[in-house]
Image (cartoon, rainbow, N blue to C red; front, side):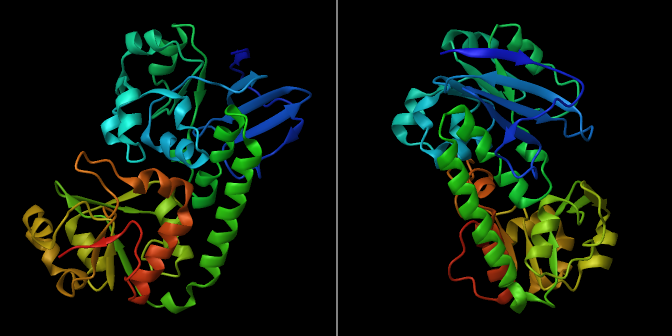
Length: 337
């Protein structure tokens, strides 16, 4: 494996031929035989967080998030993965892959010793905050790192576009570009076909320890609700963060919502046991409550966070189907009984 190295800089470099749409927080630039990936800070707009230059595809990869595995699986490159945090929480693994891939521990505190013993060419990290100490610890091992911040993207297509980053490091950019182009076309077609859902209102989340977090209009789910043509109380709120509500506020805003999605419960009875006031919502009383647990494993692995990241058009279709009352072919969503 040969690479040019890792450079962290504080100002934006001059780019060459980019193969991204510039909607996501990275660019890929090809100059002669070299590829340079530029990652932009999700917390400081326009600031370069990292650059990685290389001239050969990477062969031994360690990942710290199950969402990375969704991209890698889609590209058919799972054989390149030698380690991952908590493989039991990864949905898209065969039994053979689950036995072969080393568990490097918790994603918030991966084992540096296990990473070093795996001798990877590249460690793909997600960062949960500025000042995250894990990247410096991995770099101290002498192993190149690459930030994958897809989870910070606030639009479905920008999040899906990170498949191009994985296509670049595996030397299959043409395939990654093709997948993303198909996803983009399918998403736009679904978005334009959602007229029948207009007028139906939606509720998201649930009460947990006295607080009910709902997505603002500028978030990933907020944008999906908009594209699904749902009526959503906070659609015009441009924030990219969740909005904390009291139960009283949630009832005031959503008591008459037609459908309820994204609750972290497996049954209506579980939802009632978490908080009796959940039963006061119209959507509970009419049985129009859905989680995103349809594609899960007993270990808790959930494909919504893997292939759903690559294929937001499937999530959009689920939302449209729920809003339109035709739930015969849901992909990730499942009704609570």
